[in-house]
Length: 250
Image: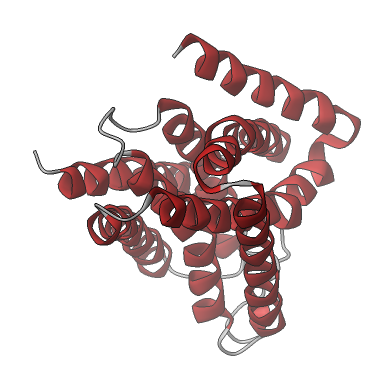
């Protein structure tokens, strides 16, 4: 199997967790506290993967300055894009409660929510695609982190969309499209950067990592804290430790 096709399939697998979560959010009455707890756990897993798999590797191959600049650029790009989408109704796209606006309440909010969900998923998928380029297969910790974090994202968002009066066709159409986009982003990331200098890959990895960390801080942790409150830090710590242990055992 070619490297780029393998990367695309891994990206598709990670993105499929969004559909699983969306199905659970649409058909099952899962307590909001459980959703928040899984989201806090997923946030910890992502932070661990960022620290020990992405940023560390980027610094070793691309240097501290390039990695730092890329990391800041990724975070700034995410924050700016997220703020623009928030103004169009996507601020609460990860929330399961009555926070998401309906199309009647905020015209264009449906498209903004879909684009916002895509914005959250693309950096993760690009990183998965890049992890395959080394020839050692996909980064297991990164894959686990993305998959685990995608389940509560799809679950919470789909429940919120349902409360806002959006149809099943819209909800599952959005998540199916984003799942395919995740696979495409991983595929393209691997295809376009195959053979690129290590420093270039390091900078792009750092940019994606910065965007992911900004996403965790701006959307995942605040949503988790709404329900788990003082337990948020503990659950996030357990997620971090779980991913760190997987990385060391791997």
